[in-house]
Image 1: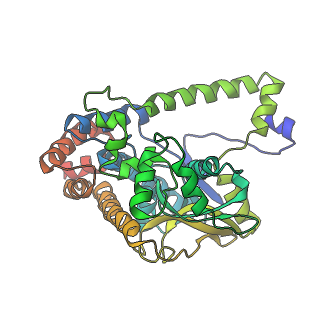
Image 2: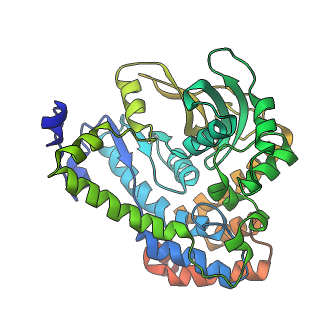
Image 3: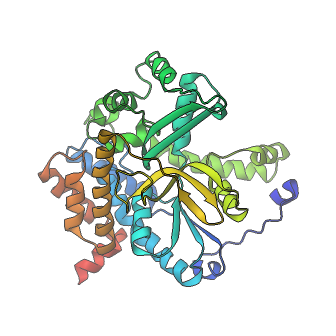
Length: 386
């Protein structure tokens, strides 16, 4: 029905045997989770019981650690099949925690990998709303790691005018409830974060001061994101079902433009467009000069037949870089814990994490999380068996 309405020639084939579909692939998209919502709830609730005031519990803090321990082994299994059956494919990863999964792929495979996330769109929207401008008028440059990037430059696309001064002035006029965490970081470190407070808060130890749910240790342990994820699945299914039977719904579906950049990236490679993407996740290799070479950074890149190549953005301010360098050590230890089932590395990652402020709590919550999720942690099970 979509092909008939759009004149497209696409064929969709589904299979639960990925090895049957991988041979000859030019692009492989990885977007997987392990029993997502029930285990995410444990990632949130168990650390809270041990006094951790964290945000979301998805990609940073103890929840980000357990999330990676579940997804990294699964993604590496998929990667081994890609290496065997279509080793030249460009792998496009959406699986979270994005930077940690991409780091595992870069460290333990020979594949070409790029991670994509739509969160930069939230930052651009915040800037545009603050400046009361159309997003298309704004040239935004940001660099950092996924969910924690800094806006390093802000210009008017046509005139080249530096928009940062006007942004600071207008930001001060917005209500105090607008992105309070980002504003504190801006005041302290001199650059505005590009991703919005929710995911950013997962990386900041004192983020609970600006988040009512995290600050209130007696609050119901259910971030709205749990409910919104389930609701999104239901809404999406209903919209697709409606488009099967209703012409107006079909037209609306075809006219919808996603914030995801996967189609432009694929087209950029296929047609050698040499286009600039403002945020991709790739191995640093000097793009951000004062971050580790091996670290997976989120930075602008050129997309061409050669793949996705990050652009050099120079140094970040020392304070901004220091916050991210700490995350690089956490990510590295997390990957090693996930790959080898190494509890010691997992504990070290927790003790380095800024949202954890107690050894006793870190050790106890790790024990409880590993026990509660044992069926979903194959590398830990293998190590225990050995």
